[in-house]
Length: 561
Image 1 (cartoon, rainbow, N blue to C red):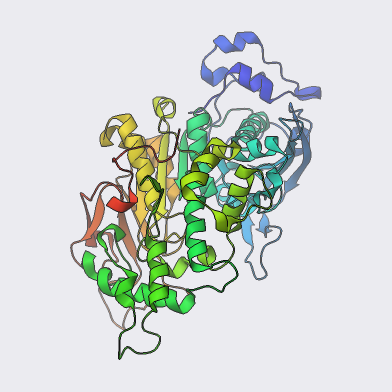
Image 2 (tube, rainbow, N blue to C red; image 1 turned 120 degrees about the horizontal axis):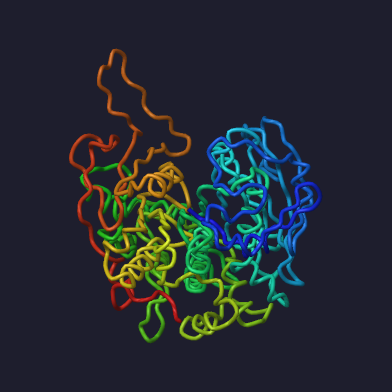
């Protein structure tokens, strides 16, 4: 469990009026479960009722922060501000909704929200992550933890908007985005939770994907005491090199001043070619590539020949561009920059390669401190290392030393979809193997860190649905390490699953439950149609990414020091 020292809590929370709390130095000598203050000295229990009213909580005085709103919200439907038209409201339980602004530096303007159940609190705290350059409160992601009974927090990481341009001339804001906003929100969020319920959270968890996955790994590396467990999906932890790979793919398909070479129809041709070659290699022809590392597809195999039907093949230029997108990015020295797109991911490429890639452009413009930097001039052999040595290098979360988090019993559940266009999957394999090497072996790493690779899943979702929260809870709280997770197979958009025929006694579902195995194991078909857990067995799989997409040595660090 995560419990703060008296010193930390004293810095985190000061109160006024009738609920004043004095945390004395004597508390430091007491057990961790007693280091809270005069409100209560106990660890909270599940179902513990609030000790304060929501308006009383608003009176709390936080150092370098101020509470801007504290409202009791009745149970009922909730639609996040700015949600797209037609978004279905989510029913939420009654809760105390806290908003605060944090200012750990003179240029900081970090917004956070904390939602506290008024009934049936599970005694736990969760923080959810962001995506991309982040600049918004992740309110939609906060709904599910609240429905499960969590006290849940989120932050906008200190700026508004989805571009990195906020950081020009604002190094403190870049620091907030890189890591400080999350940590400050954790500390303030736990202090307020403790004051509200009169007891510390029993367990504290992180749940994030994409930039949120990066944020979770950064917490593990820099603030190992913040969380007991972390869900780190599709982490953008190798930020600089990821953006270089995205720009290389983008420039190849969208040359300066020209239209895109590949479009939706070409993506479909490529995907059809991949499936024709590799879909059935797992023993099941289901429109998915189970493990793209076993697929040696080349787009050049689809170049049009005499007699080919229109729309069934590619021009030589289109094939060359596709093969460049599939290829890993390397420096002139041969050093790996980043893995390429895996075969089977083609239908998701569009957002990265068919329009200007601002996320990458902003990254290298900030590294060069030049708002007019032209991303078409990217030189991966020079610019990547320069960016990693600049202030932008702080955006990485690639440290292999997770020993402090492991030593205090922390657990990490990582996942990544094999059809992710925004963060090609094999970076997660390369990072995981670097942790394995640092830990001294696979068994030592799996003792606290598991990675799941999901066929056909795009960026953070799609193809399958999971209950990652329960998986992490069972490991942290019940010592049940996840060798396997079960996933609900989702039908493609617009396709309804088949229904049982009349009078059927036994019916294999068209979209049922599949088995996912912890890396390096892979799921292999042993019978049935693949839509029931018994159809699959976990067996040893290959170590590492594809050879061309791996560092020169298995387990080597994935970025410069």
